[in-house]
Image (tube, rainbow, N blue to C red):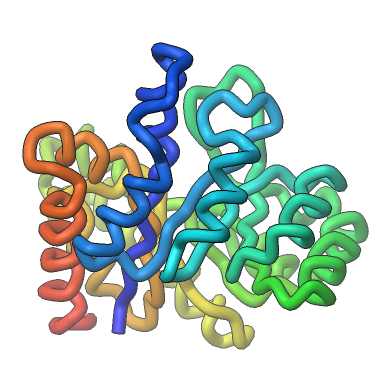
Amino acid sequence: MIELGVNIDHVATIRQARRTYEPDPVWAAVEAHLGGADGITVHLREDRRHIRDDDVRRLRETTQIKLNLEMASTDEMVGIACALNPEMAMLVPEGRHEITTEGGLDILGQESRLRDQVAKLADAGIVTSVFIDAELPQIEAAARIGAKVCEIHTGPYAHAFHDQGRDIEAKAVVTQLDKVRQAGAAIRQLGMRFNAGHALNYYNVQPVARLGGVRELHIGHAIVSRAVFVGLREAVREMKQLMRQAAAHVE
């Protein structure tokens, strides 16, 4: 059954805008859980621009559902993950000047180093995920370094959907969705778990949730944005309902 991981980074972004103590990301995690989230995702960035070390520690102590720690593939972050022991660590590319993650991790260019880091995480009992573009060479490299999960970057699909007037039958949208579908098939064939995420929202999520074999969707900004108007618990409930409806009619 398809699962929803809720990214609560932007709750911390609101807090950091005033350099204060509220809203509390841990409280957000509880509300997301009560709304039906299957997991909580946070990105501990090297510059600590939103989520901070203490947030991750408190989430680890408090969260009763899966904790997915997004992080750059650095020795510092691997050490933090091994100490905190989240259920999953997702290696992502990270740029100091980007607003959000702009593309998938280039595994091909750093296989040896990433293989060592994945091994360290595995030794600590942590499942390793990699956030990659829908490209077969990157998927094959993910399998070689020992990743157990591939999260396919759905940004190109989501942007095409928006640019084409939210027309799911537009050629550009169909092309991008098919790339995600083919990537998912390749991931599963290689024995890894197929997850997806990035720029998914209440209007574009169902075609992705309908893809065969997709295990989890990780969604943050859209849910936090909806929560401004309806509350986080309800925003999560609405997203989960859309996903489950779509997954009941898998392609």
